[in-house]
Length: 317
Image (cartoon, rainbow, N blue to C red; front, side):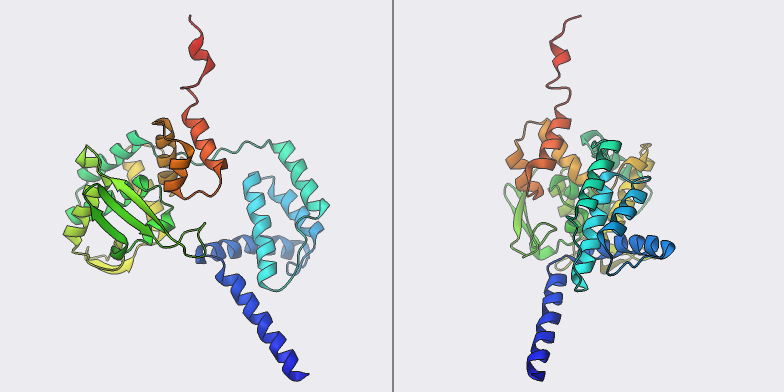
């Protein structure tokens, strides 16, 4: 009997570990951060946060709706649910008090959500030009331009961008192949290959700029995007995804563009929007960005065509 109990306990621990392994580290950190906010709400009002119950979650979401978007509420709900699972507890997130409360909040707020702005071609050129004008070492300029241009050209998430190693690169006559070993939507590590062709304008070409960065940095293996120390010496340490955000915002600011409306995601959404404006279909956009559903891509296409397919164009005044 004791042996059976021990085996069940071991299986239980292994199952919880498998649940953790099914999620990327950044995803787990996001869950913890979201749950911390929920925990603070519960502590303030004398509720139990783990395990909790549907009516407490509904109260939390109602309170949160006063300052947050509906997309934030949905993400927090997922986080609360996942932390319960990871700790071996069950929470009925489909309970009517949660679902109907969210429906009421959505009606009250409206469903349209204005996200961060995409970085478009004109922004991209401005950023590259600003980097070229900076009084910093050429090697730093080369790195920063490569980060911005590769991030845009490959439609990368910032976590994907910083995860690229030299071993993932293959320069071919048509351009560059980048093997993405794992991403947010590829938790089983099946991988995908992105192809970046050469641009006509070499100054803004992701492939040309990356080649220059690799030559100047003499990086032959490991992370391609690395930190500089305070003495401006290149280290072997991989950049963080937050550094990508700071770089984008910093150069937008130097270019005279209000940066509060942009984020690390602006490179990825910028690629999708510009590709849609240029006539790329949703399948080819999804093949590059790695989106698993058409919902977000169709939103990019719709926004890109807001003037192209505008009925007002047919009116002659």
